[in-house]
Image 1: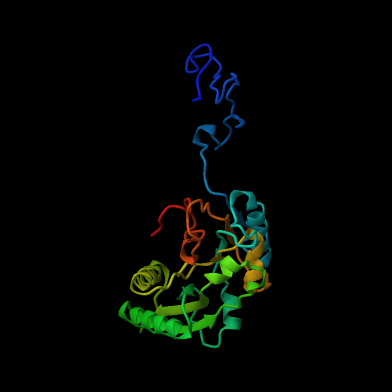
Image 2: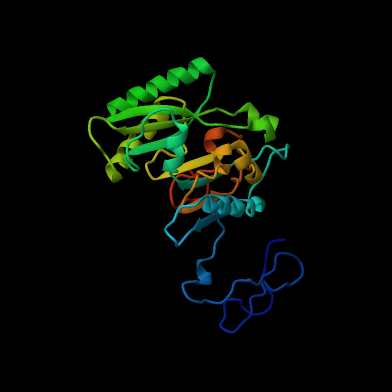
Length: 278
C-alpha cells in the first residue's frame, strides 16, 4: 500500500506529521538536531560517505594520513562488496602531494615543489600494450607543452584482493610532468596537466584518478580495509600531509565492476561517485 496521511493535514500548522508507509499510522519523525550555528537541518539530504581530516598546526604529518584512513574505515557501511567480500566496489583517499617522500623513491630529478605534477596512471593490458600507451601519453604531454620527467612503478600488494578485483586490476604507474622549456607553477601547470589527462583518457585506454601539483589520489576496487594493504606507500611515515580526504566504496548496484569507475576522487569537493565526472 502506498504511504498515506492519517487524521489532519500533516502540512497544517501545529499538526503533527503522521505520514505512514504501511497499514498502521506511525508518525514520520526526523532525528535531526535543531538549527544551531552554521547547521540547518533543512539542508540534510542523502549523500556519499566522505570524511575530511586536517590539521590546524600547518605542519604536515603522516598522522593526518593515518587518521584519514581511519575515518574511511568508519565509512565501510556506506559501501558494498561483490559476492566475494574481499572484492569491494571502490575506496580511496586524496592527500597532498608528498613531495619529500617522492624525491626519495624516484630515480630522476624533480624540480621545486609545485613546479611538477604527478598522478597515478591506471594502465590496462599486457606489457606491450602498457608500453604503447605510455609512449602515446608522452607524445600528448609534449604536444601540450609538458615534459615527462619520468615514471614510477607504484608498489602494490594484491594479496588481500578477491579474484574479481584481481581480474580487472591494471598496472599502476605514477607519471611526473613539468613545464617544457620554462618553469610553470600554480594554475598554469594545473591547466596543462588537466589537458594532458583529458586527452590521454580520450585517446588511449589509460585512466588517471588525479594529475596535479597539489593533490594525489590512491584508490582502487577495494574495501576501506584494503586501501593501505594494497598501497604500501600509505603506510610509509614519509607520506605526510596537512589534510586527507577519504571516500567510501561507491554504490555499485547494477554497475559492472571496472577500475576506472570506482570511487571518483579528484577534487577537494566530490559528488556521488555514480555520477559522471569531468
